[in-house]
Amino acid sequence: QVRLVESGGGLVQAGGSLTLSCAASGRTFGDNAMGWFRSAPGRERVFVAAISGSGNTTFYTDSVKGRFTIFRDNAKNTMYLRMDNLKPEDTAAYYCSAPLTNRANFRVLTSGRGWDYWGRGTQVTVSS
Image 1 (cartoon, rainbow, N blue to C red):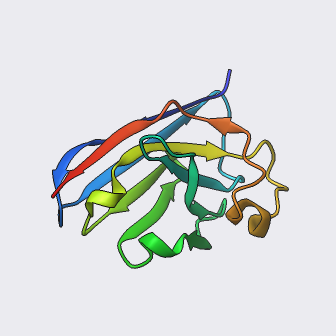
Image 2: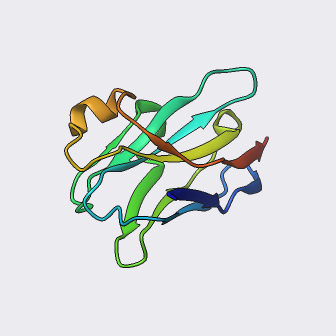
């Protein structure tokens, strides 16, 4: 059974930093792109960032560019999201995700489509 488990969320003041982790089990995702989404209270889940299977290609939504960094350790089957200079508007539940296969088109994935596996999320709250 494939599982994605997020961790690392918490409460932080504006301007602070957090690093989220997404540990995958049940299969190896080393060839798959992986990504992060978030859902603010009362709002739909939206795309945040994606990383290719090799880790050489990354993509971010505009609102987090220059503040968030996505990276992965394929030896550990784990993906991360380093979040710096956090803002209150970053408050959300953060979810990691992966497509079913390694043939998913990266450009399609960055549009928010084509994601199949989901974790249960980790809450990030940024106080002003």
